[in-house]
Length: 259
Image 1 (cartoon, helix red, strand yellow):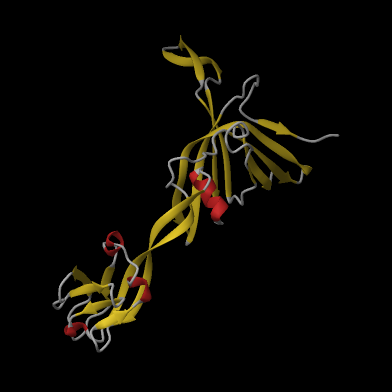
Image 2 (cartoon, one colour):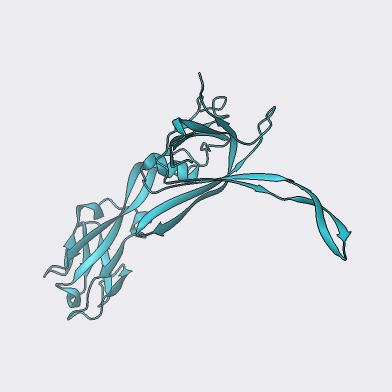
């Protein structure tokens, strides 16, 4: 019997001759590694005693599918989940979450407000966190003139948000966009996909003291990672089609090392 698996990894096949100039080695921390061989049987039938019965059968077309999943997630695992290498992106406008209170002078001072561009001003939003003397919780509308109740103004000259006197004392949540250089997935027009890969894994069991190797020499992703939560633990799952490599006989191989 096989009681478990380990030392599972994938290696890309085809990126060495691209602008990347190398293959990608990924020894992922996989929680699931499901290898399914599906056959469509072929059957020959004949009339026997008034009924059509199978008199000969064989396995027909074969499809081999690999499903892998992982619960552990770091930046490299997230790249593998999307099958895309992260790229450097410049001037990415990220909304920064902030909280504060409307002062007795009807404002909230924030040094980041002074440098906002006209485009960034459109990304400033304010939300009153709870019900109070100012009314119900909810988002405030931005205006360019003196604000009424339920409104706010962006004062870049004095680097602050200005409110109506009705909002004094209110707890607020607000966001202000700021530019960053990031390592990004899904943004840049030029990017590198993992593409064709091969998998190796080692099966463990009492009859295999040194393990038995499973080799999938040619796999291509058919479904990018779906995200699900099982028992409170987030899980990322990908599906691959296992292909017969050129010059090969099967989409999978087993190996037991004897020397």
